[in-house]
Length: 251
Image 1 (cartoon, rainbow, N blue to C red):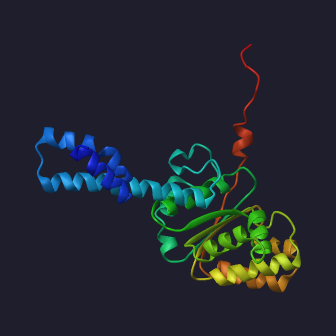
Image 2: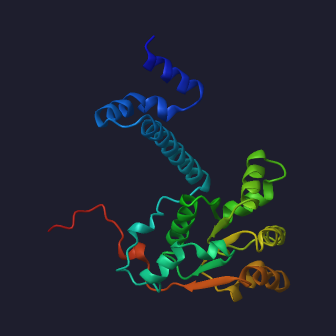
Image 3: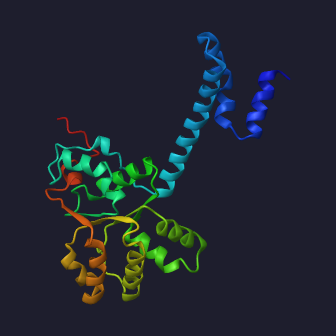
């Protein structure tokens, strides 16, 4: 067995997968460049560290459960909806996340609420934060079943320990009194520890119509709005303006 094979086997034993896979290439480049031993070691370590960071990012992105579209680098500013490039870039700096601020994205369907929320969630994950994206329906299901289903319990613990939770389409559909209380308890648990992004097509004043409990609604909003930026989006639906067709429009 050659020295190279021995080293690659040692890498596998130590679970240095990237170093093992790239060892020969890095060594060959080092020989051509006549680098020092210290530089060679650093090059090998860089390969392993970069691989692990990328692998960790992919894992955290998967756990975040993002929708298909979340890359804010591709955001279409030619579509007017009430938020400009400067404001979006300020949100992407995530200083509000460091200060445990909440963000409410409010507006009609198709104005970019979910896209922006998902994009900010990914930006947080990319910077090392624990961030998760849940629809209101998914969140209610987790709260209902966390005491009886292991997967739901795991999801709940992740949310409790998160830096950021996105709740998409909150208050779109009526919820039971029990579900409303469970939601309040969660928000209360996260209050001033975890930032929350909420997307909704209803103003906070309309939430009581969904929850059918003004006292509970007031208590819920008190915690969400204490440190919160409300961003009102408007305009026509981006999806309807850019909808696809199966027909060839050529005459």
